[in-house]
Image (cartoon, rainbow, N blue to C red):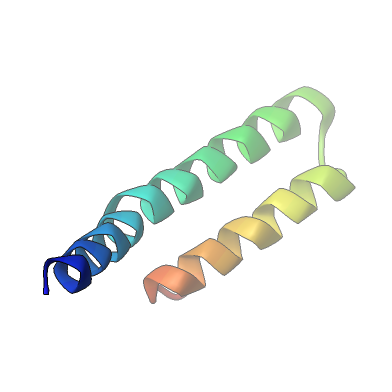
Length: 61
């Protein structure tokens, strides 16, 4: 029983804390690179990854 609750708590923490943090971090890195070097394949890839993370959270573009 405790193992099941612990696993659910870890999954909830990952979705509630880590995923929004990852989305924010990808956005900041992308904005920083765009400001420094302009639009590139790397920044487009970061934006695509951010969109994927956003879809995990259930939010639209």
